[in-house]
Length: 358
Ligand code: GDP
Image (cartoon, rainbow, N blue to C red; front, side, top):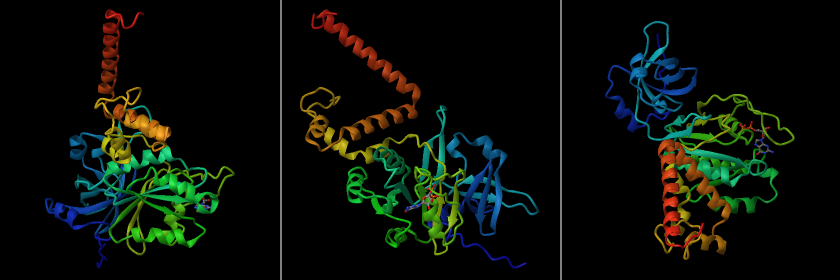
C-alpha cells in the first residue's frame, strides 16, 4: 500500500526537536493537535490518529503540566492493528503557556506548548482593557513566547489613535497590530508572522474576532463564528483547543473559551511586562522603599509627575500579589503573618519608647 507521508517539518518539527527524537529509535514522533477527555489527536508521518498516555507515563508523571498539551511533540508507539497509539514521552518544550487552573485549587493548566508567537487579541471597542492586557502580557513573556498585540474591530472604534497610544504605554517590547475583519489592511499586517513550521497561538476574550481571523488564514470557514449580540460579545460554546495547519504554511492554535487567565509562576513575565516600574523603583532613595510614605520615592514621584498612572501601579501590585499567592500559597501566608508580627514588634517598641501612646 502506498501511503503519502506527512511532512512533519511543516508541523513544526525543527532541527531542535528532530535531534531529541534520536533518543527513541523505536518510537515515532508526533505532534498533539487536540485533546479530549484524556485522548489526544496526534499527527505523525503516518497521518492523524488518536493516542493515549502509557501506564508508565501516568505513573511517573509528577505535575499536571507534565501531561501532553496541544502543540507538544510526543514519542508514540503505533499499534499494528486497530487501536490508539501510545504516548511514551514528551520532548522538552521550547515554550509553554501556563495559567492557573480555573477554580480554587492551586494547580496549573497548560494551554499550549511550543508556540513561537502569541497573538493577544483585544477588540478596540467593548473588550478594550489595559489591565487585562498586562495580565496576558505577563503570562506570554513568562511562557518564553513573543507576544504580538492584535487590536481587532478597528471599524467599530472612533478613537483608534488614542487607544493605540495607551496600548503602547503598557506593551513595551511587543509588536502591535490593528485589524478589522472588514478591511484588508490589518489582515496583511498579520501575514508576515505566518511562516512554515512556525506556531502561532491566538488568545483573548470570547467575541473579539479570533475565529474570524483564523478562518481568514485558513481560507475557509472552518471555525464557527458568532453573530454579534447587542453588547458586541460573541457566543462561543466550544472550549477545545486545536492546532491547525494553514494552507500556505504555518500553524495556528485556537484557544477558545478562556474566561479566566490566572497567573501561575509568572514572576519573570511580570518583571518584563512592568520593567518601567522596576526602573522607577531603582530611583528610590531607600533600597527597601515601600512606595507608600517614604521621601524620595521614585514611584510616588512618577505618579505625581504623570509618568506612571496609579491604575498601572495598582495593577502591578495586584498581579504581583496574585502570582506570589499562586507560586506558594503557604509561604505567601507565612510571609504575610511575619509582616504582621514585625509590625506588631515595631509598634510595641515605639510604645515602650513613648513614641506611640496607645
Ligand atoms: P472569537 O470568539 O474571538 O473567535 O470571535 P469571532 O471570530 O467569533 O467574532 C465574534 C463576532 O465579531 C462575529 O460576529 C464576527 O463576525 C465579528 N467580528 C470579528 N472581527 C470583526 C471586526 O474586525 N469588525 C467587526 N465589526 N466585527 C468583527
